[in-house]
Image (cartoon, rainbow, N blue to C red; front, side, top):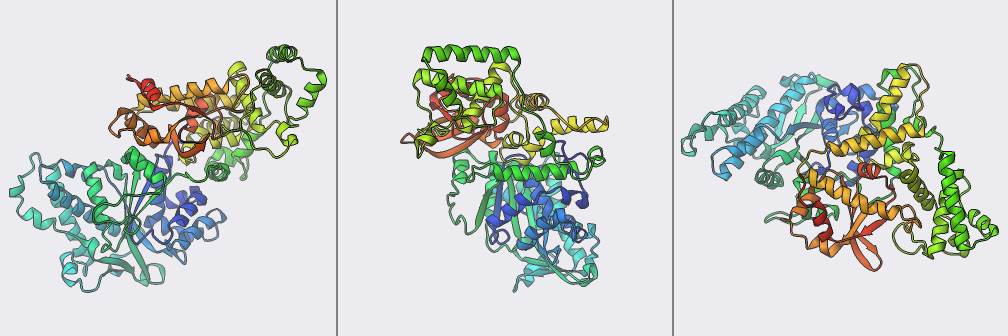
Length: 629
């Protein structure tokens, strides 16, 4: 299985193959966030596709944890195991939780279509979840070699009647009781004509099933691993957004019950939240439903780094993921065990303009020098303020920007759209690196000079999303693998990297097929076009340009949630076509920035640097979206 192929990890069934592929840093960061509240109340994990929800769930499954002792001396897995141990998922390298990942689609969703009162349908759904979970726990233990004769179900004190009702004293009877409940509900779902509610009769007796209310732990005797183990039972409802919204609301309310002793997580995509709720999650706020207390009976965790706008941390994660994903590929393995995608990509030499294009730049600069009436001494003094590592073409492009600024008398603005704060004339006169990037982007659009090459720019385009990084990088890995198979040097020049990544970005946007995708593409085209216009102004007023659209935050707060634009924004944010940055203070106003996602930034030829934006209104966005075919 090639881990660079989209979502390939979900099809790796062998834990011995899966564990070495999991980068420890995202897992460590996740468990550190809410380490004391992950297993004693409802945890709702919210993330975009590819943010790691399913990988997290698979990591906690018993078959994965049971393989941990095989990696005791493996340095690649040591940090991951330490994070799991600190979170009480492992106890001396042995499993401490018994987790079942339960997909929410299929039968669970079908219960909503039954012709019964909503309260009965909710009751059926709860019983089905509990029955499938119990059966899954037993099956998971058997799959790793546990003899159920050595398993004991620990229940809450003073629960003798409830314990008898689920047959917890006899594991075979315990399993059969769960099967009976599952069968009874399955017959209702699959009946050609479901019986009327008043005809259900004994069906209601069979589905009266509530083991979650009494089960505290599962004890496995020393016969399995040489010492007795006590495991925390856990259910992980994966893809909870596939439930009907009313079902999702009821399950959320039910699993908040603090009388439930098992650990319970729900994994859901951002598009299960409306725009208002998503903004609230970004601000780490929650609203209380009747009878609930957010934070006390539910923790909601967003798998998206919204606080740290420094991409250096994700670059490190991406480098680690790339190293792990290259190792299983035989073609690379034969070349050496220490191959680094970062090193392979960063060996590309900077591109250079053709003599013809460089002559065009020099001619334009000569004209601007004449118009500005600048002496050669002043030009030399200006060029001395540039970074010292510039190639001839970049130096000429930077000079072009500086001469245009001199001509227009436009003060340089910082990346954040406000006058740069400098402490001395010397610092004020120095040309910052953002101007250099702006010059490179202008050469990209004018002369097709490659820009998107090297590992850092590839990682920066991923929106802190591992799957998006893997998807973008896969086209480069495929080309490098072909080189390796043919016995050629493992190298891609700047133009090869740039061309492959931009084509991949354009293809990915064309493949968007989620709700309102056509409107989202129009939105991206509009914002991208406005940002291009600002980026390509000859005097580069924002240095390296813009990649975001800024609207007043008050306008966004007043947007009707039923407005089509609200729904378009909802899905654009859920699938990371856009990234919401708020509140953003600039020029004495509070803004909400709709920043283009990394894929769109590459497709539109813009900077990855954050903070530069074009100002606009919601009305302009509505006009731009219009009616998409």
